Image (tube, rainbow, N blue to C red):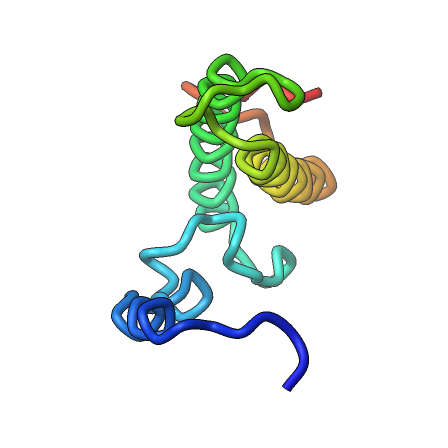
Length: 125
């Protein structure tokens, strides 16, 4: 077979892991990972999704800042510092959450619904 050979220890570790994020129930997944039709949601459901995505964006941005401040660029990194992969994954998580948030915001505005009360939108951009 082509590709990297896995040793027995790595194969056993792979079997002991829990289900992947895609296999989890919707309640255990992040809102941005749940693909649903926004047109099918009523205003209350759309508001719940919008608020959940706003929280997810803030959490992803916070995690990205923690990783960014704990990472040096280039090869001069000491051990124990997050890799470029960690920074890339954090950046991708922020982007995915922001895109889902903006989709809900556009749907809300296209319906002509009034602005939400007690809602602090995350900084995007």
